[in-house]
Image (cartoon, rainbow, N blue to C red):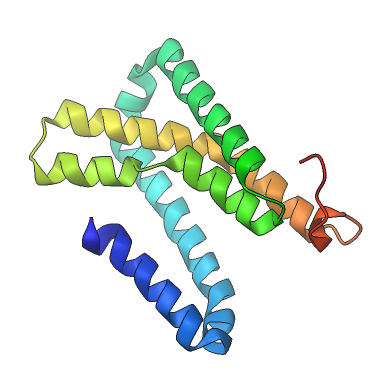
Length: 155
């Protein structure tokens, strides 16, 4: 967990505090790279584990989508007045620690069915978050939007 989550987070916080100008210049590049890597990961995961995702069935899929949408809504509503923080809180609430669950499963040599189930959850969850992320990006880019100026009222 230290190397997978805490170290990158700590390095980012340190960079922002010690070299804010450099961090600001790197931010859009790192966001783009992270988005591209996430898209590649989702595509590779779908190619590699499409069968468990499909085999999850409609009831499990609806349950995952429901939990993800509720987590997005809670994070969005509790994310505060700043649009970027609100979006980050919603997305991190929805995605929670699926990657950590996958890491724990892999390190403990879990059965392939367990790993496939975690991967199926991650893929369905990520596909559920994508429309929200697109909506938030469009809201942030809209120049006439009150939210784009930090004045979001109703969400």
